[in-house]
Length: 325
Ligand SMILES: NC(=O)c1ccc[n+]([C@@H]2O[C@H](COP(=O)([O-])OP(=O)(O)OC[C@H]3O[C@@H](n4cnc5c(N)ncnc54)[C@H](O)[C@@H]3O)[C@@H](O)[C@H]2O)c1
Image (tube, rainbow, N blue to C red):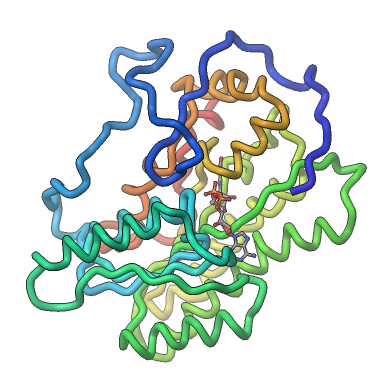
């Protein structure tokens, strides 16, 4: 990521509060604080620390048992947190990513799924596999996703979380960098969705695709100059609507999740570039804090499961109220 100095005056002034930090799946980030530094509401909005192995099913329609789901960008961050949630809901998950090896949290999630699957009844056992691929490589995506569908005998869903960010003023942007941004964040998402949808349609199988957009699809971020990224995320939201319109006839649903600021490797590099963001960004939403990858687990399971069976062409914005202000 090319980092360019951003004028500090461009940042919203805000009281200094310590950064709320992420936990298990981002080993570079220290543990969560016990409480919010400033109470914003009468109820606690900090994510609960669940013992994930002690979960009980809530509603049958949220179950992903016997489903086979592909997660691009599944090596770390949001993709990995969501892959872990899908496993816990019973799915077999295939993570795609360009990293040579996934984060340490990946092997923990795979081991937890293997241990939990020993107690599952008949049928497919939850399992986590890794495939290295660049989402810009259409042929390789087709081969890998085709192989997954052939080996598993089915394919039921996708989370397209692979993405990059680049902070560069519009006046400085090179055509090469803009092409790279759109190539990964838009074309890469389209090609991943295409590879999965082709297998579903060939097998006459319905399914659900979830594309990870951003609140940056809706607003231009104050104090974060990334015009091509913002445009790419708006394109992802519109792409999802278009794919939903085209593939609804095949029983394929397509929706987006548009997160607010999440503490991941992507944002950590932006904090390193301008430390004041650690305080300015939490101040820009109604809950007064940043979010964690784990706070997008429920949305992933909801959108991929029968719990959202009548939902398509929709955007689920989860941003602490950032865009509602
Ligand atoms: N972190 C945030 O604040 C935030 C906010 C809104 C949306 N998002 C979106 O969430 C998604 C996940 O981001 P994250 O914060 O977990 O970042 P991250 O950098 O931790 O994860 C992104 C993953 O995508 C992979 N990837 C990037 N380019 C790829 C390519 N060409 N082929 C295959 N894999 C590739 C990376 O290797 C990485 O594992 C992204 O689409 C991002 O735009 C993030």
